[in-house]
Image 1 (cartoon, rainbow, N blue to C red):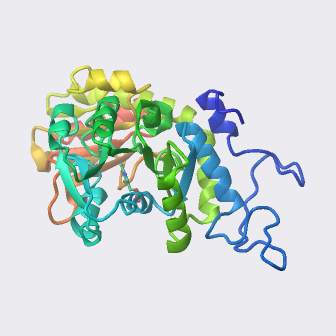
Image 2 (image 1 turned 120 degrees about the horizontal axis):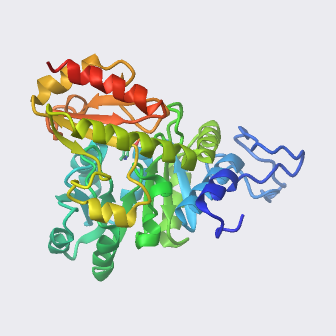
Length: 379
Ligand code: PLP
C-alpha cells in the first residue's frame, strides 16, 4: 500500500492484503507458535518462532507504521510494556524529562523502576518550551512528551520540543494515545519515536490490551528495541494483534464522532455555574488552544472537569450519572467517567475535584441529558 494514500484509506487497507492462498479479504489470524523450516533452520516464509515475529503481528505493525508515517513499528502486550521497552533502551546515566501532568504509570515507572537501571526521570512543565530548554543538560537523552496529557489535557508544542531535543542531541518520544495519528502525527513534527496504549482508541472497544512503538527511522534504536522484545518476550498475542488491527480499520471514523461528542460535552459543562474549570483543548479558553489548533486536526474525545464543590461534588456527580459508566480506561465506544485522584494510589496528584470523561459514541443529546443528572445532584 503506497504511503501517500490518505489516512482514512490507510486505516482501512494498511496491512490488509488478501490471503494469497485462499483470497480471504479479512486478515487471517495465525496462532501458530512455530513455523516450519529447513533442516539447517532455513526459513521458508520469513518466520521461525512467534516470539520473534509472526504474520498477524506483522500486519498490525505495518498498519501502525503507515498511520503514524513511521519507518517501522513494534507491538507490545500493553501500553506500559511499550513505554517500559522504550525507556529501557536508554543507557545507564540517562535523564528523561517527563511532563508535570502525565499518565500515573509513567510517574511510577520513573519513581520505582527506571532508577534501578540508572535512568532518572525529571518532571518539567512541557507546556512551556522555555522551561524545557532550561531543564536540558548533558545527561538528558530523551524528552518524553504526552500531549494531550492524562488527565489535565495539557498541550505541548511538539515542533518546539523537537527543536530543543535536536539542539541537545537528545530524542523526542511522544505518547500519542489520546490524540491517535488521526488527530496528530508527532513524527511529522520532528519526534523520533511515538508510543501508544493501543488498549484505548486504536482497539476502540474496551476488549483488547496492547501497546506499540512507532519509529521515525529503521535505525539502531529500532534494532535494539526489536532484539530486546525478542529476547525478553515482551510481546503481543496474535489474537490481540488481530483485534487491534480490526479496531484500526474504523479509527478515523470513530475519532470524528468522539471529537464531535466531546466538544458538545465540554461546552455543556463549561456553561454550568457549579463547574470551576473544563479541561478541553478545543475550548478557546484553554491555555494552549492555539498550539493544539496548530498541531492537531481536531481536539479529541477526552474531557476533564473540576467542580467548585471539590472532591465531594465530583463524587456526587459521578454517582448520579447513568449512561457514563464509572470505570477506568478510555477510548472505547462507551462513555466512561472517573475520579482520577481516587485511582492514583497513595499520593494522588490530580486535583481532588477533577473527573475525567472518556466521551463515547452514544448520541450527544443522551450524553448531555445524563450529565444534566450529574449537575442536578449538586443541588
Ligand atoms: N499512556 C496513556 C496516556 C494512558 O492513558 C495509559 C493508560 O491509561 C497508558 C499509557 C498505559 O497503557 P496500558 O494501560 O495499555 O498499559
